[in-house]
Image (cartoon, rainbow, N blue to C red; front, top):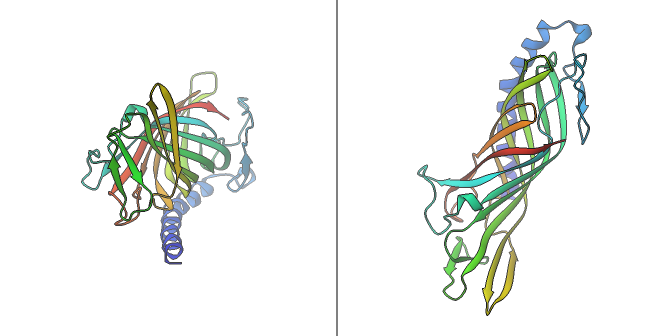
Length: 264
């Protein structure tokens, strides 16, 4: 019961902070527009919907829905890349985000708006050391495997997330293409966690998957920055919450960066 009260308290503070930041901006932009053209609370659902490039389209369209891939890592409480038993191989630790729905609120013409939606985030951390996490210990513990040499040894966390983005768009050239920049918050709930190991023994390949909670924090929230032009979309995320609960494991703050492969 305590953890739900704590989650509610934190989320309420975040919402209150965002309202204090965004509400003055909304009121400012709304006063500058003709009321006959105001589309402040008009919602556009871009769920797998192809966007129109017609110059006459005055609706604001954000840049969220799509398939994103990137690389993961985390820093410890001292602000340094983790080098303890959870040290990872950055080039093998990938993030995948399926941003499957998008909702937009236009603030100023079709150039400034608020975007939200939903996403399924999968963060993979490929361990550098030949370790196995123990699922039934508190705080989190491990042992070094001296028998098997793992071909793959990763820890994965899956989140159902929701963003709140404030986006600016700037027309460039004569083909109605735009540079966009967005900043905001992203948070959600952890819905799955597991380890996945692959090793060989006598020329035969074995796989071992353990699905456990591993003392991860049941929720997450952080900040996100996004920049793009035409079909090129880049992102960077930084978590303000640690990966594990307090005193349940190392103090690690995940971050990721990457590119959108497909825009819905």
